[in-house]
Image (tube, rainbow, N blue to C red; front, side, top):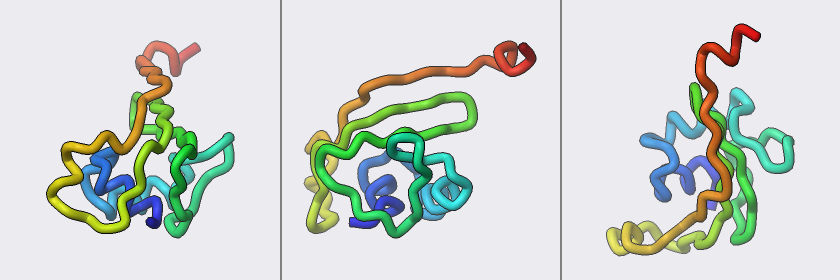
Length: 92
């Protein structure tokens, strides 16, 4: 499954277009290497997401073959780390 679609299905992004934009702008990476929207997600991948003030590191636990309503009960990722940047940190 493409990463932009996975981010939408797993609810890490609200919309697929939002996920696509984040990927194009280099805000989603693996091992510090920015990903492209066509990257195929695999179980075990550790992905770093940069939101406006939050950095989130997740490990992929499940990649669905089909998108169905039953997916909302399946844990698709595990949060490994979370860091919030406050505006004060940007000044120093």
